[in-house]
Length: 234
Image (tube, rainbow, N blue to C red; front, side, top):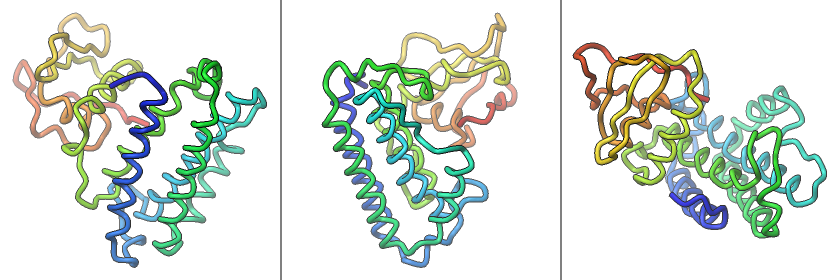
């Protein structure tokens, strides 16, 4: 998957349209049904997707103007906004996501080339990482709705980039392992153990398992035994 933020903005458009089509087909009463995220309803997930777009719009504004614009006023404010918005009618939820996405897309279109290199402390990367961050949020949380969209629907490029991101960010709390995605020549390594278990499988399945979106039933482990238990992701 390209690192070009302008190309990734187009991918965000596409992923958002796919999520909105899924949401639009819902029974309006389903916003109160449980999602695949413990403790969150479908309404919680939809509201989070909208508020995340606004948070990342703030980061793009920061990068473009140089005026500090945090993604959220505070962690507590973030959680409160999700809780307050979760019970809204489905039509309002869908309209909210669409409007928040348009604000995000407009902020991306307004970015001059040099602004993409602006370092964002809250992200720990430059603004060029914001479109990927948004694409990841929309695509993974689409799965969390539990409405028929699964990691099998991810593109191979998205799954590989997500897998590499998880491996790069894995800390000491993760068990050591080597990952062998099918069709990828090089092995991805977590931890410093010189002889960890080797987990193999399709890239999508590995990415889904490491991010807590699959149980790993379609993966192999060598030597024979149980799969390592991945740490909580995000």
